[in-house]
Structures are given as structure tokens and as C-alpha cells.
Picture 1 (cartoon, rainbow over the protein chains, first blue to last red):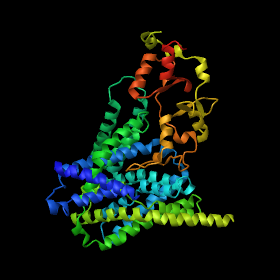
Picture 2: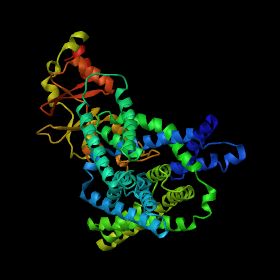
Picture 3: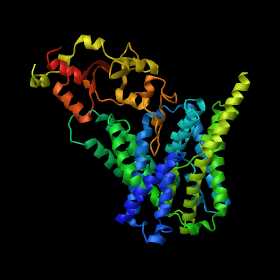
Length: 384
Length: 152
């Protein structure tokens, strides 16, 4: 097991870097590493056994840290200052993307819980690819760029909330009470941490240790209340985002997560990729990926249009919101661990999500460049 | 003044009026060029809501600006907007875009020894001195050294 982890970590870093060099997300390199060290390649050739309860556990810690960092970096202030346009577009975006996912499941004949689970995967956009593309196009400061970024940030938050509500365990009325209780505990913790931020007594590294332990305690609390562990980790991050020590907590958690736990999660995702599952997943892929891409384009374009964006600008916002990455993979993994899908379907949905991640990362920059270029040309024409 | 005497003093006792009028301050709406111009001669700038009220909103330090000057590089996993704030891509427009909003501060009635411990614990080199929610001075390493060596 030690050898497998060592090889996976090094290979993931090298593959991640190789992908970064060709302007693609490192995560794809880490997932491909998983496929290489997994049962179908290294397993068959060298007899390596990467998939085990140990690597699964390390990956789960990676998920907690990833979502904690997400909450910490998004922060309460950023949500508060998102503005009306961002909020409205996000609501359209999340609703349509979710409905399109559910619809895909329904058309394929899955039951309601399975269809909802597919809807959940499609909610959150990857901020990273979008930012990279907007930077390349020098459009980060444009109105389209600003709206895309705001909505991409907000739909991470909404994605976590939708996941908690739709896949929470227990009777609906009890679940509602538990969700309200969870948010009350969150608000009390937020106020409490704000009150003690200028505390004078000092224990070395107490703040960082508290932040990390809070991420795990809040995750456990969320699980106890029938919600997903990541919901707890994300909201724990939000709680600590208001502290003056936020940057130190962030730097430390990122170092710990980025070097060890988070790559192991994405490697685990790749290693769980089952080539046999690909045999009968043609229909799923044929519906899942187009619905994922079109759902975002329609939802965000309509939302942006309602907020006063012109046709082509609104379309550009929709295109810029297509990429899926970290949160989609986290959601599908959680749903697999909750046994929402049967074993074969679980592998098919995971494989489809990995394909969605790769395809959306590849086509978004190309499409956005076409749409945005046309937008500039049309503006010039109208100005002329 | 020896170090022990300095630790026992209150912040109020070591602040002078000259420092108050010489504080590096900008309004949060100030454009980025104004901030950069101040940083050519100072190592930080306090950001206030407006100069009349001096209600403190944030701080911008040399290290924040160093990140802006270097080529923009995104980390492996990107969340929130903080990595999209860039001079290179024109998203760092105003002081409030790049300031640290969460601050550790001290009051005029705090002991100098306590304040210095707080700076060590939080690994910061400057602390705003607050009175009734407004910034009235700052404690910096330079300032403490000047007092200790009798230059103030």
C-alpha cells in the first residue's frame, strides 16, 4: 500500500504539471494517474492494488479539505457582495442545470432519487477553467467575465445546498428540521468565532488546529443530521473565512491538501474508473453530457438576459459556465458512497462524469473564444 | 526607555500626534494607481471607508502588491474570486479589490507588551490602533524601535 501511495503521489504531480503546461487542469492529469495506477493498467501489469479502504479513507479526507478550502476562499463576504445580477443568474443556472440532469435520468428510465442524484452532479461549475479561459481572452475584467465569475462562485454554494436538501436522509419533515438546525448551528458558530477573533491568550497553532478540527467536527455533525459530510466542511470553511488569520489557515490547509490528500482523492476517482462499465453506457453518455452542457447554456443565458445582458453576451455567460470539475466529482463520489446508484450504474455515472470533466474543459475555451470574439465584433459593428 | 518599561506602557502613552497625521491612508474607492504610488515609499496602506470618518476597512501590504506584480498563476484547485484579482488582467481596480478585510487591531488602552505579543502570534508587522471604531495610529516594528532607541 505504501508503494502504491508513493507512486500515485509522484505520478499525479508530474501528470498534473504536464496538463498545466498544455493549459489544461491538473485535475485531469491526476484522474488519468488514477487510471494508470488502478486495477486495469498497473494492477494487471505489476499487480498493484491501489483501491483499498486506506486510499479511500485518504481520499475522503481530501474531499473534506477541498470543500473546507472552498468555503474558506469563497467566504461569507463574497456571498454577501455577489449582487442582484449574480444571484438571479445563479438561481436560473442552478435550477435549469439541475432540472436538465433530472430530466436526463427520467428519460433513461431511472427512478426519482437516481435522477435527482444525476441532477446534483450537473449543478456546480468549475471556477478554475473559466478563469483561465477569461484570462487568455483578456476578458476577466469585462462585464461578461465578472458575471461568469460571480455565478461560478455562487453555484458552488448553491450546489452544496441543493445536494444537502435533495439527498438528505430521513423523512422530509424531519430532514427539514435537521437542515434548519444545521444552519442555526452554523450561524451561532459564525457569530461565536467572530466574537473571539481578537482573543488575547495564545497557544501555538491553536487557530489552525481549531480550523482543521472544526472542518471534521462540522462534517461529522452534518452526517449525524443526515446531510453530506462535505456540507459540513464547506460551512466550516465559511465560518473561518471571517477571521484575520484566514490567509494562514488557507495557506496551511492548501499545502497539506494539495500535496497529499486532494491528489489522492482524484487518483482514487481515476482508479475507480471501470472500463467494463463503458460497454453499456452509450445512451447515458449521449444524454448526460449534452444535457449537462446545454442546461448550463440555457440556464445562465436566460438568467443573464433577465439581468439585462444582450443576446450574445448572455450566450457567452452560458458558454463560460459549462466546465465541471472538482465539485461534480466530489458529488458523484458522495452519491456512490450513499449507494444511490446500483454498482454498475455507479461506475457508469462516474465514467460519464469524468468524460464530462474532460470534454467540458476542452470545448469551453474554444467555444467561449468564438462567442466572445463575435461579441466584440458585433459591438464594433454597432458602434461603427 | 528600556524594553521592560516599554512593555508596561499603554499604547496611548507612546502614540504621538505627528504619527496620526502621517498615517498611510486611502479611501476604499481609491484607484489602484494611488495605492501603488503610496507603496513606493511606504510598506503598507490602511484602507478607510472615507477620510473624514477614518472607519477602518482593510490593509494593503507590500506582499499583497508583490503577488499583483508577479505573473498571474492559478493554483491547482480554484475557488472564490481571490485568484482572479490581477493587475495584469485589469481586475484590480480599486483599493478595496486587493485589501485584507479581516484585521487584528489594538486599542489605545492596551499594553504595549500585549500588543507586541499579538503581533508575534499573528505573524504581522503592523497593527492599527483603534478608538471608537476609527484608526488613530499604528504600531509598527520601526515605530517601536524608534521609541526604544530614543528617536521619538
